[in-house]
Image (cartoon, rainbow, N blue to C red):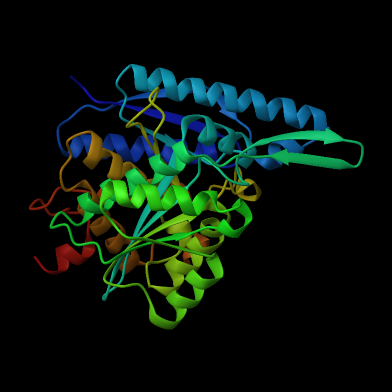
Length: 361
C-alpha cells in the first residue's frame, strides 16, 4: 500500500512552504522509486496576523475556535484512516494549543552536543498555554488544568522515547522543569508515583534551577528534560544556541499525540512561525520544511537514508553560496529549492549537477 501523509496549511507563508514540502517529498520519493500520496486539509488555517486583520475580539475568538475544531477533526480522521504523519505549517497559537490540549500532545526534540545527548520533551497538553479564554469588561480570564492522568502520559512517553533513543537502557538523568510550587504539592505526588511505576528516578526542579544547572554544569551525557511549555518554549532556542545545535529557523520538530483517538499520529512542523511579513516575496527560508519532508519520507514512507541525502544536498548548497537572504544568500525560496532538487540523489549515486562532485570526478 502506498503511504499517505497529511498536510495542513496555515496563512502567512504557509502556502509557499506547503509547495516546498510537496516538491521535496515528491523528489525524495522519486529518488527511492516510491509513491507517496498527500492528503491536504480543505481549510487554510489562520495565523495570528491574519486573524488581527480587521477582526474584532469576539470574531477572533470565533475563528480561533473554528480553526481548532476543524484541525482537531482533520487529525482524528487522518489517524482513523491510518495516516501516520502530518506536516503542518504555522497557525495561530491559541487554535493550535486548543488542539494540543484536546489531543494530548507532546513536542520532542533531540539536541546533540559533542559531550551529551539531550532529549527535550515538552508537555503541550496542560498548563498556561492550554485552556479556554473568557472575556469580561476590561478583563480576560484564562482557565487551565493539570491532571494526574496527563502527567503520567507525558512521563510514560518520555521514558519510552528515551529508551528508544538509547536502546542499551542508559539514561543518566530525567529532570522535570515545572513551576510546581504553584500546584499545592499535587505535581510532586504524581511525579513520584510515576517514577516508581516506571522504575526511574525523576528530579522535579523549578525552571530557574534547571537553567542554573545547565549553565554551570551542562547536561549529563544522556539527559531527558520533561518541561512545562511555559519554560520550554522560551528555553528551546537557548538550548539550541548553547549546545551548538543550530538556528531554530533551520529546524523542524515533531509533536506526538497521546489521546486514544489519534494515538501514534505524529505531526511535523517548522520551529519558526508563519512569517507573515514575508508572504508573497518568495524569500522565506525553506530549510526546516525541507528537513521535515526528508524526516517524514525516511520515518513513514520507507525512504531509508533520505535525511542523510537531504543534509548532503543542503551542505552542497552551502558550499555554493546558495541560500535565502536570512541565510546570507541572495536567492529566492524557489531558486534555493530548485538547486536542492537538482543535487538530491541517494547514497552511492552522485549528483552530476553538484560542482563539488564534478570537480572531484
